[in-house]
Length: 92
Image (cartoon, rainbow, N blue to C red; front, top):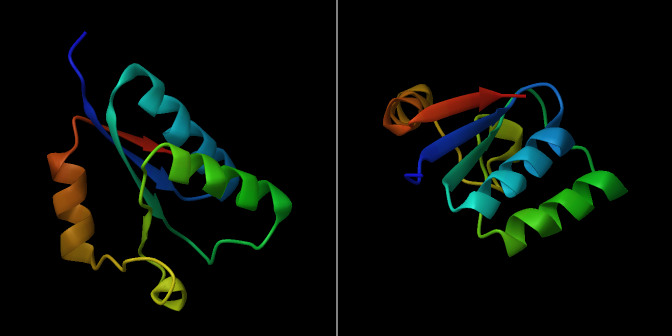
């Protein structure tokens, strides 16, 4: 199976999106993650999932200006380019 470039959009459930993104790396896909719609909650579950992202070599980005100091901030053009460059987009 050919490796794919997959982009996960964390729109509703940030923790689940992080888990999905980390899981997709198991089969060798290149995976990106964009946190959307609100800041990432400081919860034990999100902390565990953030550790998985680190182990999976996924560097999340965000479209939420309030998180711009924590994660790289994507404007609409950069988000569009990331979506266009992906072989598949998953919205969680």
